[in-house]
Amino acid sequence: MEKIRDAFDFGDFSKPEKVGFAIFTLLLLIFPWLGVGSFVKAVAIQFLLFSLFGMGWNTIGGYGGQVELGKAQYVGIGAYTVALTMVWWKIPFWAAMPIGILIAIGYSFIIGYPLFRLKGHYFAIATICTSLVLQDIFINWKLVGAAKGIELPIHEHPDFLYMQFKSDTYYFYFIMALFYTAIFYMNWFRKSKLGYQLRMIKEDEEAAESLGIDARWCKIKAYSIASAFVAVGGGFMAVYNLYIDPYSVMDLDLSIKIALMAMLGGAGSMWGPIIGSGFLVPLDRFLGSWLGAQKGLIGVDFMIYAALIMVVSAYQPQGIWGIIEQFRKK
Amino acid sequence: MILLDALLQGILMGLLFALVALGLTIIFGMMDIVNFAHGEFLMIGMYTTYWTSLLHIDPLITLPASAIVGMLLGLASYYCLVKYLLRGPMIAQLFGTFGLMLFLRYLAQFLFGIDYRIIQKGLLVGKTLSLGPFRLDWTKLSAAILSLIAFLVVYYLLHRTKLGKALRATALNKEAANYMGIKTDRMNALAWVIGGGTVGIAGGLIVNFWYVYPTVGLLFVMIAFASVAMGGFGSIKGAFFAGILIGIIEMLFPMVGHFTGWDFFGPHFKFTVVYFAYFIIVVLRPQGLFGWKK
Image: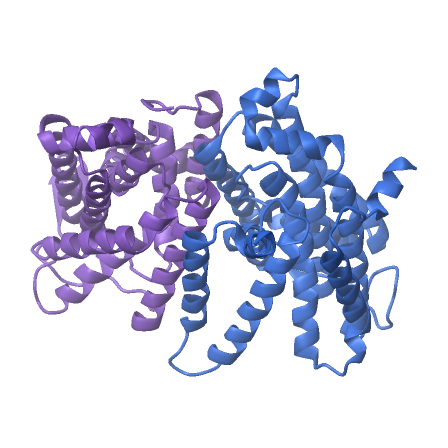
């Protein structure tokens, strides 16, 4: 009971934040009815999806301060479990999703236990390596479709059990529901015992250990929470795109994007990942559709994107939320 | 016999992997920065040699051009980007160099297109050396020899000259080095110049027998990460032996499939097993095989 009240209690946020959050919620609720095109709607779905990923990453990467660059493997586990169980056993999405989450959590414990012996750069590169190994295995594993990937069967009629709809609007509300579940969870998480322990570990790991915090175990727990978040997003990707392959759900670029969005918005803050993804996803998609379509300009959109990443990392490593905080202190 | 052949090929390839890793490990040892753009430096070195070879200059003679381009690239990245990244937290440093990597990759794609290119003619291209039962490509052999020479030169520079002493002093304790009158900022820039130069040379050597395309860097940078981490971040000796070790693993692994007939051990997993080996080694020995700095 206490926990549930904590999750819905936004009392310690400042007034502008509360007002902003309320307006944002209202905007999201009426968004599909504003007469926007299908492309904008798809971008909005991407935005909510990447916010979900970013919030997951934020538990271990933001609050825990561990540079984790292998989240794509859990997107892949979530997406593949949902797709495979739905294709093989014809079970509904709502049964497939929990299986995906459980597998992701189990796998994250197996990987996390040796992984968190490492620190700093060794850890960052090891996370990339584990993700690449899993991707290579899936590219060559014939049982799961190898490099070709798998297609989900298309139902004739919209079906809530199998999460198949004719219009993006339904997917939008579904991912929005996931997004808000994540927000309430994160709101509880940042005030939970684990949340405080992680922040302590981030500040000074040795001091935290001397106070009796088992740093490695805390990190593993946060890592598995992050993995569960990301696996949910992966499962959504499977039913939304109706097609997955190892390149679309397990690529290194995806891992980096997830971490990048959280960092750009402001790692370790409640709103950071949402701001980051609200900034980067539209930029990425609109630049891509605007410049990518023009002849002779292939790659320019990514160059602008990359230049932006460099400028932010060099001058404002606290992210956009860091700028806002500085501004408020003045 | 086929095993020995694979071993030999693995050592040759490993020497090149080691040369790619050399720049990465020097930069890391100096300022604790992992340079994601390292593979893209290699790609640009490869393109430099490729384009100059189209002017009917032999790819081996144009190596200095690749080296100079690499050095300038290193210098520019240091003064325009890395200098500012050093003030921030580790994650910002990672993403800063990651942004540089994306930028260079798509710049190359914008300028040169996504075609796969390889050097068609040259003094050594396509010639093989028969050494008893073994047949070695001259391109690979000369590349391996030159990379060995480059290694020795850098090792000499770092461990036997005054400049190298200043570099290592900066790596060990920046502030103390500053008090001793060492211009640490310049030393950092020098590390980037050496790193860029060696990887430029490596690119010039590799393009003789490997296709160049804008995303070629990723595979090499991952292998370089693995060899640097295996050898211990910042250790030159470590990068050398780990590079060779990786070359051997990458060549011998498909041999297991060849002998057992088990499909799993095929060439398609040869780089996967390198990543896996990295993971096992750093977990069991987190400071790497030859780590000198924790």
